[in-house]
Image 1: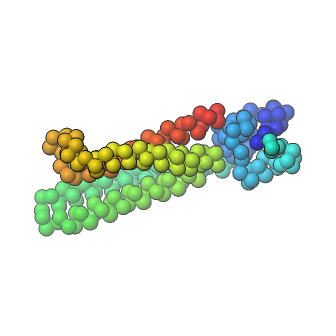
Image 2: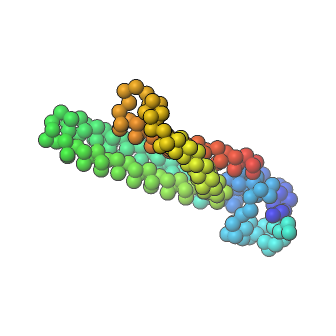
Image 3: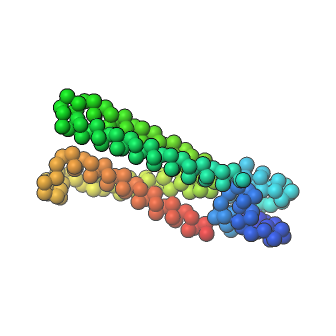
Length: 64
Length: 150
């Protein structure tokens, strides 16, 4: 699954550690999410969407 | 303070308390165990105390596991679940090879044991070996999970 996490984070000038703290996850998890190598659970996806003030589908795109 | 940080702080405190409690239980059990060795009338009592101490320490370990689990985020949990399933299963499958071979050739198994090893030692060694295979498998798969997602 592709996502715009890295772009959204960069727009706010946040580091991976900043975003990790805001989402209450580890920096390694943020890295795995940004590289598209780990798909978040629905609760985490909603949390990300709330944090960036965008709908989930505007952040995550199915690659099919 | 974030939830994960708070959970980590609680985990550190829980580890400290558990080590203290395990130390007290261990010292008490070893003293009473020694008493049981010296005075046969205390043998059953010392065995019960040692058993209860081991149960107590294992309960502490499980409690720590629960604390540690709540301090881990979802990706860390996923890595552990995946690694226990695949690493543990692979380790178990590999451990089955010597297990079946030694079953098929008991004479070779006897010859492979170090001289002077008692039956109890051999059983304990076998149990440790089985756990070791699973633990190594888990460790390798856990490392692979994170390396793949760097």
